[in-house]
Length: 205
Image (tube, rainbow, N blue to C red):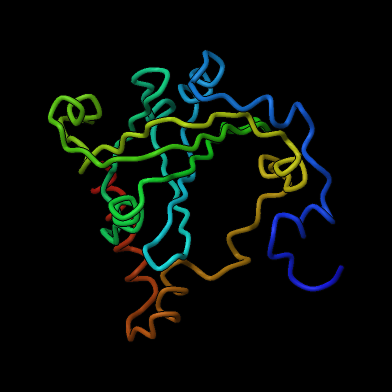
């Protein structure tokens, strides 16, 4: 077969059926191992869907365990100050389905959780995520539907945690220079870089 593989039937002409282990590892609740993974994780990516059908993936980070396990079917995470595009939150307002991919620095295994999200500003929920007296802008709660550990192959292939693979900063222009060029701004890149650095220091929480 040649050309685009647009149906599951077409895909299965190239890919074999998943093994029993690949299917059997999926849970519909947060078990103790998944809970511990979340408690240790300082970083995740969240996927959502736009009203026009395009998908979006956004990073989220914080101290290890910044995502709280409220119970075996519910997660909560703070929404800290960002660029105010509200891509993820706007998407969720239209379509609540989300996918979460949790990472642990140095670990090649990952944790995947799929569920239905809601944005909340309930005071008690906001208070549990306050840092230096500052609450988050909102809290995202996720009703957990699917939970499973993801194997190591992607991170093994990438060598993501290997210091020898770190890309020298000199391989790319500064963030300010790239933004200046992309947005066609008539301003020195150093000024943009300084503004971004100051914002990251003052508005992290």
